[in-house]
View (spheres, rainbow, N blue to C red):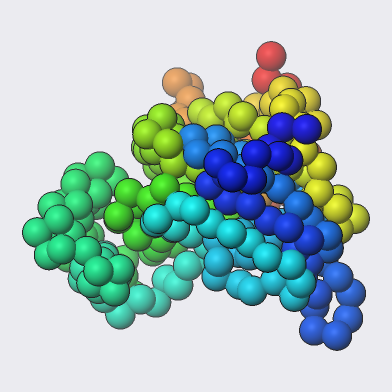
Amino acid sequence: MPGMDGTASAALSASGVGLRVGSGRWLFRDLTLNLMPGEIVRVLGGSGSGVSSLLAVLAGVREPTRGTVRRRAPAVSFVPQHFPERLPLSPESYLAWVGRIRGMRSDVRELRIRQLVRTFELGVESSQRVDLVTGNREQLARRVAIMQALLDEPSLLVLDDPWNSTDGHLREVLGRQILELAEAGCLVIYSGFAPALQPTQYLSLTGGRLRSTEHDPLGEQPSLMRLELTGTGSELTGLAGFVSQQKHPRGGVVVTVEAGHSDELLARALQAGWSVRRVEPVQ
């Protein structure tokens, strides 16, 4: 199957990898795979299946209980699903600190930070302490989490649902960055729903076992629902299954959500003060 051979040229290879929760159950075991430079790999799995733990193991931020993971990528970066919103540093200061730890030359580091601040449109927030920012601190923290991963232009990039709690603009910017990195030979492994990306293969983690396919086992794309909401409710972008939100010409907003999460988002929208004008599948 694709990605399961070619160890010598793989950017990442895993052999007999397993992870156990304490002395209890195995999240997964006996996983073997070989992933090539330039691939874009989406990892799928239900809640509690161990996807986040698997990504952490592949990125090297968590040790497997059994087996080995070999990375031939000279620079590895990881975007965690959760990033602290109480960071007592500004984004620029934090990125400078990360760059020093990674051994980046000061001139290269400062140039790259300026590029990222411009690309992700931080503006004045780039010099404000994250924990003191007013407004949507979660959005800023998510941007910083992504920026630190892109700081030294990685050759292996692992992202744990980075599109969660992001707005449409950030999704677009991150999608472009990923495509450019993959074109340059970076291996990208991610979870979550990213309409802008077309994975070269899918890894499904079910019952502690991993299955590789060239096509999305859930279909070409998850089916989507379109919710027209009126009123002035609170922000919905951080909810599970959220894809995009746009202003409606007649007032209110149009929210696109993965069909499997539409009932949950609809309930939260009502709780948040929105009224529902229409709900329909995306054609």
